[in-house]
Image (cartoon, rainbow, N blue to C red; front, side, top):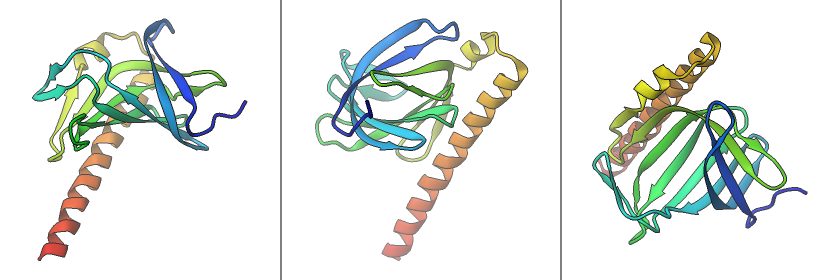
Length: 166
């Protein structure tokens, strides 16, 4: 069965041992050869999180990659759909199957605010994982790639808007 836009798909977060640690359902928005983008809604009570409030019903647009060691979640406010920021998980490449999407979380996360400020999270948990040196290096390279991506995208976007206004 080929997954199509509009399909409801369970998303399974796993720890390094492959054990399920979280599960939720997302609706498929797009499918590409190396990525799938889903829409899901925050299903917990409002939660303060590093200067943001993750609100019950906030819309999350999540892109999972099958060839990259991260996923990117764009967080939208439930009230007016403005972008609250981006939450990125460093993880093993996603595994897309006929009836689910799963990924192995490597603990290291990046929170990006709308103004471009970045906060690396859970470095202590990442340091405590029993990873092979190559896997640790790959995870750190993924974090660096995310940091560069957001610095380039957000900086270039602001620079382009300033040029249009100038």
